Length: 465
Image (cartoon, rainbow, N blue to C red; front, side, top):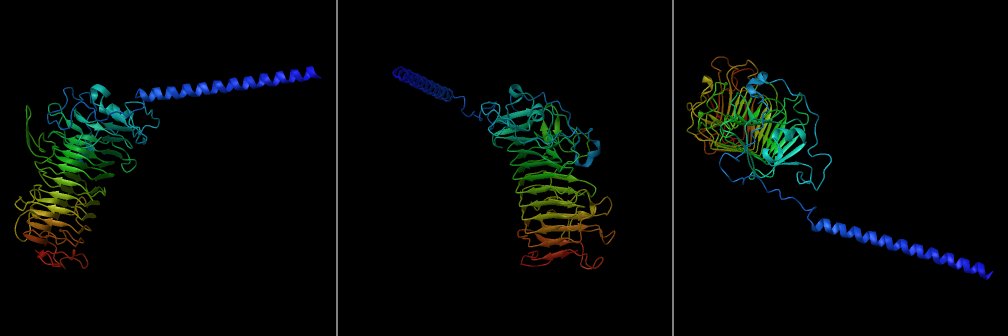
């Protein structure tokens, strides 16, 4: 019996020793793991990358890095609003991509924390076109990068900077090919522009007076941009799905002497343009495109801030529009179902009248410029100016608001069925003028004016002529 007890004690002792040994091994492994983690952190492998590093400080004002992004060879899409049929065959619609890559290695210095590819210029990161093709989201790092051809962005993709004051894309003045409708940033001709629009934000887009547009032409959302020095327009809207918010559009379409190329203007090259451009331009034959322009600052354009030629439907709201040139700051020609609301519009009163439509040159006080201008001189190709709402604007020029047409030819060839209410035209030489007199045509088709200070005091009527 004693022998049996001694054997049992020996077995218990052996088991205890084994258990103690296993515990020592576990503690040793844990200590080793902690040491490895501390070593990784101490080495900086998990530290954030300094995104401010770039080839050039954004404040530089020359023509960009010594090695421009010259391998951008994608052909420019003919994307002029007036010449959509001249576009190249559409690229196949890419499936809507996420705004960030689905699988992100947070230790990859080429990716942001939210999965955007950090593009540092062609020399370091390959062409920008290749980057936006390969990644759902591309972030342009700080610096000024020179492009010699448009960048086409597929539906659902994102192109952004680290801030408009830091990230700049600029057209190459020497190499950029002029055409009717090239754009620094352009779409890929999506079959449904309203489905998965591409996004562009937090960049300065500098046309260098040679790129026809800054961003064009359908299926995009633009925000927090500075678009400057484009040949014709900062924004082109040739199709549906265009939204522009919280951006600055400046110094558009000014004729400029370019070394080795002479004076460049919107009319250069015989591509159908005229000398005057516009910060925002849209043209169609009565198509309902419904673009949206909100909370933008538009200034110093050689031509109107907003020039709508036959496009129906749209919103122009809460914009600050100052010191542009041409016949009007906000111009609707043959355009219906627009909302022009809550804008501050200050337009020089000494500008020449509308140069392209003889019956729309002026109002009862002569051929002069207007802050807000609506014109109809025909009823063909959808060029009708009905059912627009102009409200709560602060507008000043020679004419604060001018609605004019060719009723000398036909009594209904003038803007009608429009609503003007709660507008402040203080500072205008002639507050409001309406070319469609009450009762001029069928009953119920007059324009409605209410609570405007057209004659300098509240709720006064326009001058009819």
